Length: 320
Image (cartoon, rainbow, N blue to C red; front, side, top):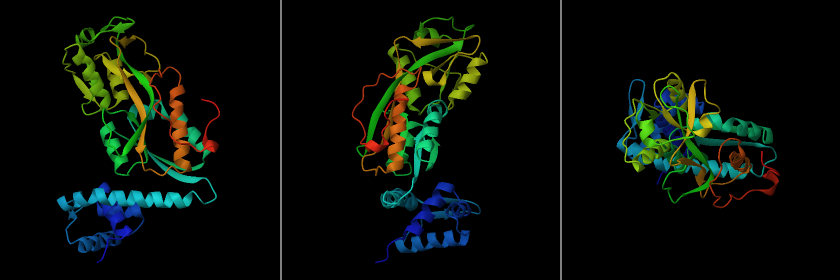
């Protein structure tokens, strides 16, 4: 019985992820007819139609969606195979696909990424941003190697997490709308226009839970996915918001920054598959991500729940 080839699966995955055969061909550095032929051969091998082709797009059929998750796992297994072989070669080369939220990407990761490159110049680092559920799904399916995310309530059994820190959530508002104070309660901040994270993200869920404890259902005037956009609109005087402390290095003139009462926080954690091969590149990445515990001005109170296994040669002698 014929079985799919890796080239066929790669062409199919690329076509689905890019949305077109031409874009898939560019990603794989082959011609469009070659990519199309690989997918046709895969469809003949499996006996089902996998793609609905349009003039300039390609969308998976129902059968294609069912096949895709298995195809990505095969690709992930092949990546692990290649990484295992690479660990025996001389030289510091590798690739890390890191998923995280936009706030952490902007305010926490830059110095850590710079140190990763210093320690391993040949390391290719690919960053993907999104909400925790979609990032964790990508880790589970092998499209990402590791994630730095706000820890969700439940994790798939195939995933493991290491808690790094509890980061406070704080109220940020124009002083003209919310008088300066050391702390603010839900009723006070709910009395003025609110600009919050969009629904679906873990940080927004934490905000909603904080309001629910006060028996308040917030009705924000705006919901956005970017902390930077929320800050700009808030600083324009349009309303108040609740953000992670790391997104606010210092209040802008005329703005007030207050702790929440009762306190609320989000737990940042590193997440990866339990069976993930930890080559040198991934060990360097995990070592540096742990240094988030020591970033100034971000409260680090999450208890450690066990350390990842590290090569002693890759461990840092002192926190940064």
